[in-house]
Amino acid sequence: MEYSWTKDRESAVRAAYPRHRAHVDTLEGLWLIGLLNTENETDEPLVTRAMAVFTDDRSAAEFAENDPLFREGLATVTAETGWNPLDYGSGKERSL
Image (cartoon, rainbow, N blue to C red; front, side, top):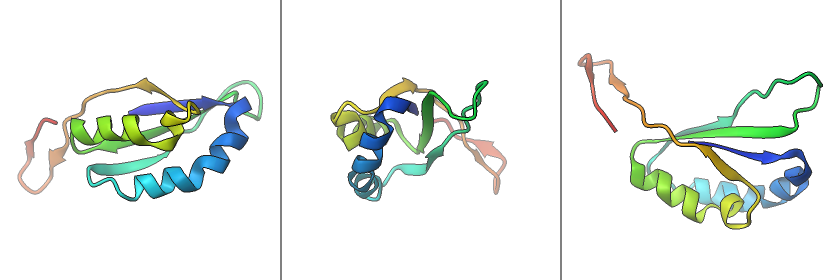
């Protein structure tokens, strides 16, 4: 799941970060989360983008419904994409 917020919301997002982090720490189906590089013609991006990868659709939906960044209208989901992780030990793919 990719999500973003605009530069004018940056201070509000920073203020909400402790609540966001507390929520993220409770998620069982979260595989990884972090900011994405945002490039444009200026040194400062107009939009901050982040990505969260989940092990199942239920966990992704719970994040989008209950995370403070979304509940408080600070961030919006910009893309939801399924993925097929590889099990390197067996060489088999499993679909999520």
